[in-house]
Amino acid sequence: MSFTLADGETLRNKIGAETHEALEAAEHPVLAIRLLELRSGLGPEPTFDTAHLQALHKHLFQDVFEWAGELRHHPFTFADGTQASMPAMHKIGGKDFAIGNEIDRGLNSLMSDLESRNFLRGLDRETFARKRPTPSPG
Image (cartoon, rainbow, N blue to C red; front, top):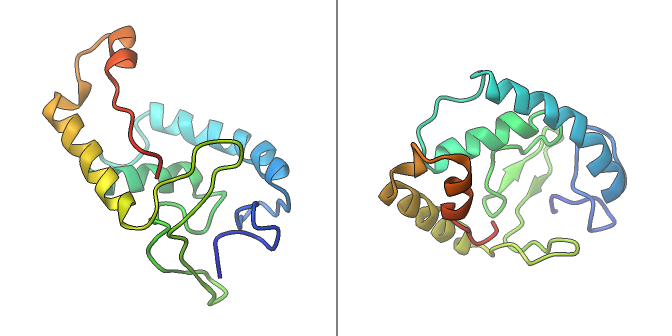
């Protein structure tokens, strides 16, 4: 079992979207609300580690995906009892995502890089945009 519907492209979702395009269109308004919550300080406690990134993902996508905040290469059990694990995932129209343990290595590398640069704190917007890390997609 995977995180996708039968078409192999559309992620299983709480919204009821049956195509990739319908899912993207339906998730944007929901994400906008969750982003406003984050900007208002209503998100997870910032710990600036992998668990924090997972908590951010869970907060942002909790209304869209049952598995929000989980790492896709670890087995996940849905409410209906089915399980999914997706070590490999291909992005539609883009670069492939990291595979299996590359996810953990990429996250660890990203967090080490950010920590070594004081998590880019105190930078103006333009400098932040130039100095931000470019993680391998996970």
